[in-house]
Length: 70
Image (cartoon, rainbow, N blue to C red; front, side, top):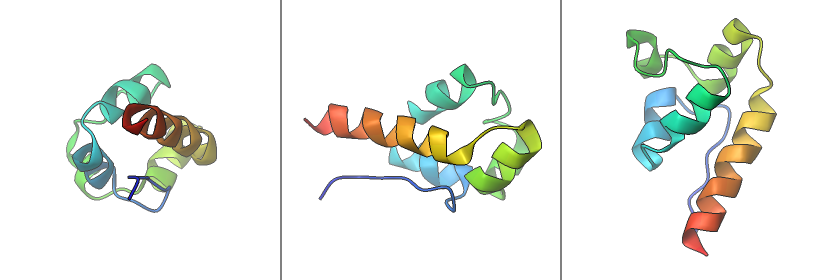
């Protein structure tokens, strides 16, 4: 079964799926992926704080995961 992420996941859960997700988040401008709030904030919540589109981030991360499994 393919791994996927969604905007309701806690950032720490996303990093557990694949630590390289930190690179994707940081490239998008979310530089606090290693701050304490990453263990309690969902991607949707963090995106709101940073003025980002969580659906675009989810799409990019899931594209990465799909390509990695191909």
